[in-house]
Image (cartoon, rainbow over all chains, first blue to last red; front, side, top):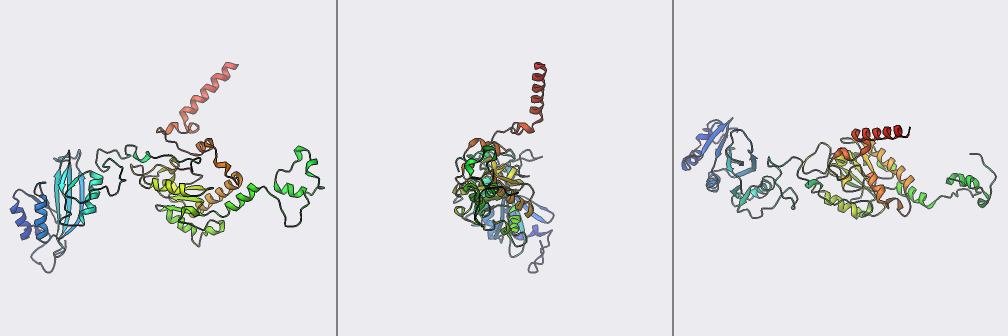
Length: 178
Length: 229
Protein backbone atom coordinates (compact mmCIF):
# COMPACT_ATOMS: atom_id res chain seq x y z
CA UNK A 1 0.00 0.00 0.00
CA UNK A 2 2.87 2.39 -0.64
CA UNK A 3 1.71 5.75 -1.90
CA UNK A 4 2.41 6.25 -5.54
CA UNK A 5 4.32 9.44 -6.35
CA UNK A 6 1.95 10.06 -9.23
CA UNK A 7 -1.04 10.21 -6.95
CA UNK A 8 0.22 12.05 -3.87
CA UNK A 9 -3.23 12.96 -2.66
CA UNK A 10 -3.99 9.40 -1.68
CA UNK A 11 -2.57 8.16 1.54
CA UNK A 12 -2.94 4.58 2.64
CA UNK A 13 -5.63 5.27 5.18
CA UNK A 14 -7.72 7.69 3.17
CA UNK A 15 -7.68 5.93 -0.15
CA UNK A 16 -11.36 5.21 0.44
CA UNK A 17 -11.78 8.83 -0.60
CA UNK A 18 -10.62 7.84 -4.03
CA UNK A 19 -13.16 9.13 -6.49
CA UNK A 20 -13.73 5.82 -8.20
CA UNK A 21 -14.26 4.00 -4.96
CA UNK A 22 -16.60 6.66 -3.65
CA UNK A 23 -18.51 6.69 -6.91
CA UNK A 24 -18.84 2.95 -6.66
CA UNK A 25 -20.19 3.06 -3.15
CA UNK A 26 -22.53 5.85 -4.13
CA UNK A 27 -23.79 4.10 -7.19
CA UNK A 28 -24.65 0.93 -5.37
CA UNK A 29 -25.85 2.58 -2.23
CA UNK A 30 -25.97 0.09 0.54
CA UNK A 31 -22.60 -1.37 -0.34
CA UNK A 32 -20.87 -2.30 2.85
CA UNK A 33 -17.44 -0.71 2.60
CA UNK A 34 -14.79 -0.65 5.28
CA UNK A 35 -11.08 -0.22 5.83
CA UNK A 36 -9.11 -2.57 8.03
CA UNK A 37 -5.46 -1.79 8.64
CA UNK A 38 -5.24 0.17 5.46
CA UNK A 39 -6.95 -2.43 3.31
CA UNK A 40 -10.15 -1.33 1.68
CA UNK A 41 -12.85 -3.90 1.50
CA UNK A 42 -16.30 -3.98 0.04
CA UNK A 43 -19.12 -6.48 0.33
CA UNK A 44 -21.16 -6.86 -2.83
CA UNK A 45 -24.49 -8.68 -3.11
CA UNK A 46 -24.59 -11.59 -5.48
CA UNK A 47 -26.98 -9.92 -7.96
CA UNK A 48 -24.81 -6.90 -8.66
CA UNK A 49 -21.41 -8.61 -8.43
CA UNK A 50 -20.72 -8.74 -12.15
CA UNK A 51 -21.79 -5.14 -12.65
CA UNK A 52 -19.62 -3.94 -9.76
CA UNK A 53 -16.63 -5.87 -11.02
CA UNK A 54 -17.06 -4.43 -14.50
CA UNK A 55 -17.14 -0.95 -13.00
CA UNK A 56 -14.10 -1.67 -10.86
CA UNK A 57 -12.17 -2.91 -13.84
CA UNK A 58 -13.16 0.18 -15.82
CA UNK A 59 -11.98 2.32 -12.89
CA UNK A 60 -8.45 1.00 -12.82
CA UNK A 61 -8.57 -2.28 -10.90
CA UNK A 62 -7.15 -4.14 -13.84
CA UNK A 63 -5.59 -7.12 -12.08
CA UNK A 64 -7.47 -9.99 -10.50
CA UNK A 65 -4.94 -11.27 -7.98
CA UNK A 66 -6.87 -14.17 -6.53
CA UNK A 67 -10.25 -15.76 -6.17
CA UNK A 68 -10.79 -17.58 -2.93
CA UNK A 69 -13.53 -18.70 -0.61
CA UNK A 70 -14.25 -18.96 3.10
CA UNK A 71 -16.65 -21.45 4.63
CA UNK A 72 -18.34 -19.71 7.57
CA UNK A 73 -20.04 -22.84 8.89
CA UNK A 74 -20.46 -22.46 12.68
CA UNK A 75 -18.54 -19.20 12.50
CA UNK A 76 -19.45 -16.76 15.25
CA UNK A 77 -21.82 -14.10 13.98
CA UNK A 78 -21.81 -15.33 10.40
CA UNK A 79 -24.96 -14.76 8.40
CA UNK A 80 -24.05 -16.68 5.25
CA UNK A 81 -22.41 -19.99 4.68
CA UNK A 82 -19.77 -19.03 2.10
CA UNK A 83 -17.86 -15.87 1.34
CA UNK A 84 -16.29 -15.73 -2.12
CA UNK A 85 -13.34 -13.38 -2.00
CA UNK A 86 -11.87 -11.49 -4.94
CA UNK A 87 -8.57 -9.69 -4.49
CA UNK A 88 -8.19 -6.86 -6.98
CA UNK A 89 -5.23 -4.63 -7.64
CA UNK A 90 -4.72 -1.42 -9.52
CA UNK A 91 -1.37 -1.79 -11.22
CA UNK A 92 -1.03 1.97 -11.78
CA UNK A 93 -1.78 3.28 -8.31
CA UNK A 94 -0.81 0.10 -6.42
CA UNK A 95 -4.19 0.16 -4.74
CA UNK A 96 -5.72 -3.03 -3.62
CA UNK A 97 -9.34 -3.90 -2.99
CA UNK A 98 -10.97 -6.93 -1.45
CA UNK A 99 -14.39 -7.74 -2.82
CA UNK A 100 -16.47 -10.23 -0.93
CA UNK A 101 -19.72 -11.84 -1.95
CA UNK A 102 -21.71 -13.99 0.45
CA UNK A 103 -23.63 -16.95 -0.91
CA UNK A 104 -25.59 -19.72 0.72
CA UNK A 105 -26.55 -23.34 0.45
CA UNK A 106 -28.07 -24.93 -1.52
CA UNK A 107 -26.44 -24.20 -4.88
CA UNK A 108 -24.05 -21.43 -3.91
CA UNK A 109 -23.68 -19.53 -7.17
CA UNK A 110 -21.80 -16.46 -8.32
CA UNK A 111 -21.20 -15.08 -11.81
CA UNK A 112 -17.93 -16.06 -13.42
CA UNK A 113 -15.25 -13.42 -13.86
CA UNK A 114 -13.63 -15.14 -16.82
CA UNK A 115 -15.20 -12.68 -19.33
CA UNK A 116 -13.49 -9.83 -17.44
CA UNK A 117 -10.24 -11.48 -16.40
CA UNK A 118 -9.30 -14.65 -18.31
CA UNK A 119 -6.92 -15.44 -15.48
CA UNK A 120 -9.90 -16.24 -13.32
CA UNK A 121 -10.37 -19.49 -15.18
CA UNK A 122 -8.27 -21.81 -13.05
CA UNK A 123 -8.85 -19.81 -9.87
CA UNK A 124 -12.58 -20.38 -10.17
CA UNK A 125 -12.06 -24.02 -11.07
CA UNK A 126 -10.09 -24.45 -7.87
CA UNK A 127 -12.81 -22.78 -5.78
CA UNK A 128 -15.41 -24.96 -7.48
CA UNK A 129 -13.33 -28.04 -6.80
CA UNK A 130 -12.66 -27.42 -3.14
CA UNK A 131 -15.75 -25.47 -2.03
CA UNK A 132 -18.42 -26.32 -4.56
CA UNK A 133 -19.21 -22.74 -5.53
CA UNK A 134 -20.77 -22.78 -8.97
CA UNK A 135 -19.51 -20.04 -11.30
CA UNK A 136 -22.20 -19.25 -13.84
CA UNK A 137 -20.75 -18.45 -17.24
CA UNK A 138 -17.46 -20.26 -16.68
CA UNK A 139 -16.36 -21.81 -19.97
CA UNK A 140 -14.93 -25.01 -18.51
CA UNK A 141 -15.93 -25.61 -14.89
CA UNK A 142 -14.10 -28.86 -14.16
CA UNK A 143 -12.23 -29.93 -11.07
CA UNK A 144 -8.71 -28.57 -10.88
CA UNK A 145 -6.80 -30.38 -8.12
CA UNK A 146 -8.91 -33.34 -7.03
CA UNK A 147 -9.38 -36.33 -9.34
CA UNK A 148 -12.26 -36.08 -11.77
CA UNK A 149 -14.16 -38.94 -10.19
CA UNK A 150 -14.08 -37.22 -6.79
CA UNK A 151 -17.57 -36.22 -5.68
CA UNK A 152 -17.10 -34.11 -2.54
CA UNK A 153 -15.78 -30.59 -2.01
CA UNK A 154 -13.13 -31.25 0.60
CA UNK A 155 -12.42 -27.77 1.97
CA UNK A 156 -15.97 -27.39 3.21
CA UNK A 157 -16.04 -27.42 6.98
CA UNK A 158 -18.53 -30.28 7.13
CA UNK A 159 -16.25 -32.57 5.15
CA UNK A 160 -14.24 -34.83 7.46
CA UNK A 161 -10.49 -34.23 7.45
CA UNK A 162 -9.69 -37.86 6.73
CA UNK A 163 -12.24 -38.04 3.97
CA UNK A 164 -15.01 -40.51 3.42
CA UNK A 165 -12.81 -43.40 2.36
CA UNK A 166 -11.90 -42.01 -1.04
CA UNK A 167 -8.20 -42.33 -0.35
CA UNK A 168 -8.51 -46.09 0.06
CA UNK A 169 -10.96 -46.79 -2.71
CA UNK A 170 -8.44 -48.42 -5.02
CA UNK A 171 -7.72 -51.94 -6.22
CA UNK A 172 -4.99 -53.79 -4.35
CA UNK A 173 -2.19 -55.12 -6.52
CA UNK A 174 -0.54 -58.18 -5.04
CA UNK A 175 2.55 -60.06 -6.10
CA UNK A 176 0.39 -62.59 -7.91
CA UNK A 177 -1.09 -59.98 -10.19
CA UNK A 178 2.05 -58.07 -11.00
CA UNK B 1 38.26 -75.75 5.66
CA UNK B 2 40.56 -78.74 5.66
CA UNK B 3 40.81 -80.50 2.38
CA UNK B 4 39.59 -84.05 2.42
CA UNK B 5 40.22 -86.79 -0.04
CA UNK B 6 37.94 -86.34 -3.03
CA UNK B 7 35.20 -88.90 -3.18
CA UNK B 8 32.68 -89.61 -5.87
CA UNK B 9 29.44 -87.84 -5.06
CA UNK B 10 27.23 -90.87 -5.35
CA UNK B 11 29.25 -92.75 -2.79
CA UNK B 12 28.75 -90.15 -0.09
CA UNK B 13 26.28 -90.85 2.69
CA UNK B 14 23.28 -88.54 2.74
CA UNK B 15 24.39 -86.67 5.85
CA UNK B 16 27.70 -85.78 4.27
CA UNK B 17 26.22 -84.30 1.12
CA UNK B 18 27.73 -80.88 0.51
CA UNK B 19 25.34 -78.11 1.49
CA UNK B 20 27.00 -75.19 -0.15
CA UNK B 21 28.91 -74.57 -3.29
CA UNK B 22 32.16 -74.07 -1.41
CA UNK B 23 31.77 -77.44 0.31
CA UNK B 24 31.11 -78.97 -3.06
CA UNK B 25 34.17 -77.23 -4.42
CA UNK B 26 36.18 -78.81 -1.67
CA UNK B 27 34.90 -82.25 -2.54
CA UNK B 28 35.47 -82.01 -6.22
CA UNK B 29 38.70 -81.59 -7.98
CA UNK B 30 38.02 -78.59 -10.12
CA UNK B 31 40.47 -76.82 -12.35
CA UNK B 32 41.68 -73.45 -11.17
CA UNK B 33 39.22 -70.54 -11.59
CA UNK B 34 36.33 -72.92 -12.04
CA UNK B 35 33.58 -72.93 -9.47
CA UNK B 36 30.20 -74.51 -9.44
CA UNK B 37 27.01 -73.06 -8.11
CA UNK B 38 23.30 -73.39 -8.37
CA UNK B 39 21.71 -71.54 -11.26
CA UNK B 40 19.41 -69.75 -8.83
CA UNK B 41 22.36 -68.37 -6.91
CA UNK B 42 24.02 -67.20 -10.07
CA UNK B 43 20.87 -65.38 -11.13
CA UNK B 44 20.48 -63.83 -7.70
CA UNK B 45 24.08 -62.70 -7.70
CA UNK B 46 23.60 -61.03 -11.06
CA UNK B 47 20.31 -59.43 -10.15
CA UNK B 48 21.25 -58.11 -6.74
CA UNK B 49 24.35 -56.38 -8.02
CA UNK B 50 22.67 -54.60 -10.88
CA UNK B 51 19.47 -53.22 -9.44
CA UNK B 52 18.12 -50.50 -11.68
CA UNK B 53 15.92 -48.19 -9.61
CA UNK B 54 12.80 -46.44 -10.76
CA UNK B 55 12.84 -43.13 -8.87
CA UNK B 56 9.22 -42.51 -7.90
CA UNK B 57 10.16 -39.37 -5.98
CA UNK B 58 7.23 -37.16 -5.01
CA UNK B 59 8.52 -35.17 -2.04
CA UNK B 60 11.52 -34.32 0.10
CA UNK B 61 12.58 -37.97 0.28
CA UNK B 62 13.37 -37.54 -3.40
CA UNK B 63 16.07 -35.03 -2.47
CA UNK B 64 17.73 -37.63 -0.27
CA UNK B 65 17.29 -40.13 -3.06
CA UNK B 66 19.18 -37.80 -5.38
CA UNK B 67 21.86 -37.32 -2.74
CA UNK B 68 22.18 -41.09 -2.49
CA UNK B 69 22.82 -41.32 -6.19
CA UNK B 70 25.22 -38.39 -6.24
CA UNK B 71 28.97 -38.40 -5.81
CA UNK B 72 29.31 -38.32 -2.03
CA UNK B 73 27.19 -41.34 -1.22
CA UNK B 74 27.69 -42.92 -4.62
CA UNK B 75 25.08 -45.60 -5.02
CA UNK B 76 27.21 -47.00 -7.85
CA UNK B 77 29.24 -48.79 -5.20
CA UNK B 78 26.26 -51.08 -4.80
CA UNK B 79 25.47 -51.45 -8.47
CA UNK B 80 22.24 -49.49 -8.25
CA UNK B 81 23.21 -46.16 -9.72
CA UNK B 82 21.39 -46.47 -13.03
CA UNK B 83 18.20 -44.59 -12.33
CA UNK B 84 15.81 -45.21 -15.18
CA UNK B 85 12.74 -43.14 -15.86
CA UNK B 86 11.21 -45.81 -18.03
CA UNK B 87 9.50 -48.54 -16.02
CA UNK B 88 10.38 -51.11 -18.66
CA UNK B 89 14.04 -50.75 -17.81
CA UNK B 90 13.73 -50.90 -14.03
CA UNK B 91 13.55 -53.66 -11.50
CA UNK B 92 13.53 -51.69 -8.25
CA UNK B 93 10.88 -49.09 -7.52
CA UNK B 94 11.89 -46.61 -4.84
CA UNK B 95 8.79 -44.73 -3.69
CA UNK B 96 10.20 -41.62 -2.04
CA UNK B 97 7.57 -39.30 -0.63
CA UNK B 98 3.88 -39.08 0.01
CA UNK B 99 1.52 -40.54 -2.54
CA UNK B 100 -1.79 -38.76 -2.92
CA UNK B 101 -4.92 -40.50 -4.12
CA UNK B 102 -4.65 -38.82 -7.50
CA UNK B 103 -1.14 -40.22 -7.88
CA UNK B 104 -1.85 -43.77 -6.73
CA UNK B 105 -3.27 -45.03 -10.06
CA UNK B 106 -0.10 -43.70 -11.68
CA UNK B 107 2.03 -45.54 -9.15
CA UNK B 108 0.12 -48.75 -9.72
CA UNK B 109 0.36 -48.46 -13.47
CA UNK B 110 4.11 -47.89 -13.34
CA UNK B 111 4.49 -50.85 -10.99
CA UNK B 112 2.54 -53.05 -13.39
CA UNK B 113 4.63 -51.82 -16.31
CA UNK B 114 7.88 -52.86 -14.66
CA UNK B 115 9.11 -56.23 -15.81
CA UNK B 116 9.72 -59.17 -13.51
CA UNK B 117 11.57 -59.76 -11.31
CA UNK B 118 10.97 -56.50 -9.50
CA UNK B 119 11.18 -55.17 -6.00
CA UNK B 120 9.87 -52.14 -4.15
CA UNK B 121 11.40 -49.97 -1.46
CA UNK B 122 9.07 -47.72 0.48
CA UNK B 123 11.30 -44.82 1.47
CA UNK B 124 10.36 -42.60 4.39
CA UNK B 125 7.46 -42.22 6.76
CA UNK B 126 4.99 -40.88 4.20
CA UNK B 127 5.35 -43.64 1.65
CA UNK B 128 5.23 -46.26 4.37
CA UNK B 129 2.41 -44.94 6.56
CA UNK B 130 1.21 -41.59 5.26
CA UNK B 131 3.36 -39.88 7.86
CA UNK B 132 1.89 -36.72 9.33
CA UNK B 133 -0.45 -36.30 6.35
CA UNK B 134 -3.50 -38.09 7.70
CA UNK B 135 -5.87 -36.30 5.33
CA UNK B 136 -8.44 -37.16 2.71
CA UNK B 137 -5.97 -36.87 -0.12
CA UNK B 138 -2.96 -38.86 1.10
CA UNK B 139 -2.74 -42.64 0.89
CA UNK B 140 -1.84 -44.07 4.28
CA UNK B 141 0.97 -46.31 3.16
CA UNK B 142 1.60 -47.59 -0.35
CA UNK B 143 1.75 -51.17 0.93
CA UNK B 144 -2.01 -51.13 1.03
CA UNK B 145 -2.05 -51.16 -2.75
CA UNK B 146 1.25 -52.45 -4.09
CA UNK B 147 3.67 -55.00 -2.63
CA UNK B 148 6.61 -53.58 -0.69
CA UNK B 149 9.82 -55.44 0.04
CA UNK B 150 11.73 -53.00 2.21
CA UNK B 151 10.68 -50.09 4.40
CA UNK B 152 13.03 -47.25 5.23
CA UNK B 153 12.07 -45.25 8.33
CA UNK B 154 12.89 -41.57 8.63
CA UNK B 155 11.53 -38.19 7.68
CA UNK B 156 13.35 -38.06 5.36
CA UNK B 157 15.80 -40.95 5.76
CA UNK B 158 19.47 -40.20 5.39
CA UNK B 159 21.20 -41.63 2.32
CA UNK B 160 22.97 -44.16 4.54
CA UNK B 161 19.60 -45.56 5.53
CA UNK B 162 18.55 -45.97 1.93
CA UNK B 163 21.87 -47.62 1.14
CA UNK B 164 21.31 -49.97 4.07
CA UNK B 165 17.89 -50.81 2.68
CA UNK B 166 19.39 -51.60 -0.69
CA UNK B 167 22.05 -53.80 0.97
CA UNK B 168 19.34 -55.60 2.92
CA UNK B 169 17.34 -56.02 -0.26
CA UNK B 170 20.41 -57.48 -1.93
CA UNK B 171 20.70 -59.99 0.90
CA UNK B 172 17.05 -60.82 0.53
CA UNK B 173 17.40 -61.35 -3.21
CA UNK B 174 20.46 -63.55 -2.69
CA UNK B 175 18.74 -65.68 -0.06
CA UNK B 176 15.22 -65.87 -1.41
CA UNK B 177 15.51 -65.41 -5.12
CA UNK B 178 15.06 -67.99 -7.82
CA UNK B 179 15.85 -67.75 -11.48
CA UNK B 180 12.23 -68.35 -12.40
CA UNK B 181 10.81 -66.00 -9.78
CA UNK B 182 9.07 -68.75 -7.83
CA UNK B 183 9.44 -66.69 -4.66
CA UNK B 184 6.78 -64.27 -5.92
CA UNK B 185 4.18 -66.96 -6.46
CA UNK B 186 2.31 -67.59 -3.27
CA UNK B 187 -0.43 -65.32 -2.06
CA UNK B 188 0.05 -66.37 1.55
CA UNK B 189 3.58 -65.00 1.60
CA UNK B 190 2.35 -61.70 0.29
CA UNK B 191 -0.28 -61.41 2.97
CA UNK B 192 2.32 -61.86 5.65
CA UNK B 193 4.56 -59.23 4.11
CA UNK B 194 1.99 -56.53 3.76
CA UNK B 195 2.04 -54.75 7.08
CA UNK B 196 -1.38 -53.20 6.72
CA UNK B 197 -4.49 -54.62 5.24
CA UNK B 198 -7.56 -52.79 4.17
CA UNK B 199 -9.54 -53.51 7.29
CA UNK B 200 -10.30 -50.35 9.16
CA UNK B 201 -9.59 -51.05 12.83
CA UNK B 202 -5.86 -50.64 13.46
CA UNK B 203 -5.97 -52.83 16.57
CA UNK B 204 -7.17 -55.85 14.64
CA UNK B 205 -4.51 -55.54 11.98
CA UNK B 206 -1.69 -57.23 13.79
CA UNK B 207 -2.68 -59.56 16.62
CA UNK B 208 0.90 -59.98 17.76
CA UNK B 209 1.08 -56.30 18.66
CA UNK B 210 -2.37 -55.97 20.14
CA UNK B 211 -2.17 -56.10 23.96
CA UNK B 212 -5.85 -56.96 24.30
CA UNK B 213 -5.60 -59.94 21.98
CA UNK B 214 -2.35 -61.02 23.62
CA UNK B 215 -3.94 -60.92 27.07
CA UNK B 216 -6.87 -62.99 25.85
CA UNK B 217 -4.56 -65.54 24.27
CA UNK B 218 -2.48 -65.77 27.46
CA UNK B 219 -5.62 -66.30 29.53
CA UNK B 220 -6.75 -69.07 27.20
CA UNK B 221 -3.37 -70.72 27.39
CA UNK B 222 -3.43 -70.58 31.20
CA UNK B 223 -6.92 -72.03 31.24
CA UNK B 224 -5.96 -74.97 29.03
CA UNK B 225 -2.81 -75.76 31.04
CA UNK B 226 -4.82 -75.60 34.29
CA UNK B 227 -7.42 -77.94 32.79
CA UNK B 228 -4.81 -80.47 31.71
CA UNK B 229 -3.42 -80.54 35.22
